[in-house]
Image (tube, rainbow, N blue to C red; front, side, top):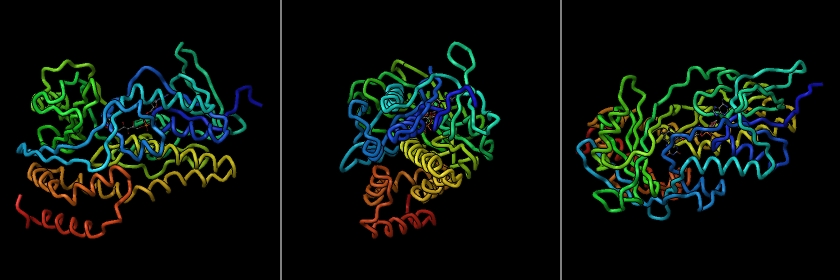
Length: 395
Ligand SMILES: Cc1cc2nc3c(=O)[nH]c(=O)nc-3n(C[C@H](O)[C@H](O)[C@H](O)COP(=O)(O)OP(=O)(O)OC[C@H]3O[C@@H](n4cnc5c(N)ncnc54)[C@H](O)[C@@H]3O)c2cc1C
């Protein structure tokens, strides 16, 4: 018998995915350890859809702004506004948001531990042991019947336990948090997200200005080696009239480009969120998908604990891809085609003037379902898209 305490589940990483998995498992009466390293705020634009607020009971107090439209800016500086008919995009500050999620897990009974996951081992009886460094530098260990790796992009749990994680490709994203100007100063609107599609801002992704109440996130992303994101954000701040605003923080992080092919080790480890490569292509949206993936990983872990059947672990990926795989595929195609040249970006922004496209875009973003109530809108969009792809429509 090991002298170490054995948890039903150990969750490594207390971001949106890990905290959600830990909360759900603890609520279901499991004995859960939630391990998170302290001290770094996750770099993030912090935009979340109403579906995330609804499904994961996010309180109003965590929303620092409510965004009611998006402005798309083309290479030739054409501006297309896309108002949201019913509802809003919620903006969260990750320092408060993530801490609140971790505290919710603890309030539901999870044991919260601060420490840095170092390595994965096994006891002689085959049970998983995670080894971590405590803040005082000493090493500690815990045993888990199942381990959820939710330690973000470049996950160590994934690297040590799940094949294929060393082949994941990333967009690198960088942003500067600036003090927000007063609403209405120049073009600044505290209830509008601006999305910049210009090759000089990003050759393969986009730049953004996301208002967060007192502060605003101005950022850009690219997978191209050698592309200077710092220069791009300096240019973007100048173009958006934010060059003179005080800079509060500068930070960046990788965003995985596509879901990994395998999320579990076929024995007792399953991944969730960025660790599993789950971020929507084209938009870079990851918070909702991390929480949804955390929930599915929690359910897969619970089924495994109940039955001992290792196949239960694979249901996390299967169920996630069933729900979101088609949207990820469409977004991947969009990114590949529309973000590849300024000529195409110009057409893409023009397409966004279309009311059908605006409605479908918002409906699917807000509710995370492909809209079925207006099938003709899909048909109209298909033909409009084809016309643009084939060059029949004027730019
Ligand atoms: C610049 C930028 C802007 C973005 N903007 C948006 C946006 O506006 N909206 C959106 O939906 N998504 C956005 N994303 C994506 C989103 O931030 C991620 O997809 C999301 O945070 C993933 O959640 P997660 O829980 O899987 O991982 P993370 O949020 O990365 O959480 C991982 C957790 O694991 C912990 N951890 C890591 N390593 C260890 C270790 N060794 N030991 C212990 N703990 C560890 C970390 O402390 C962290 O708390 C953005 C990403 C970037 C980089």
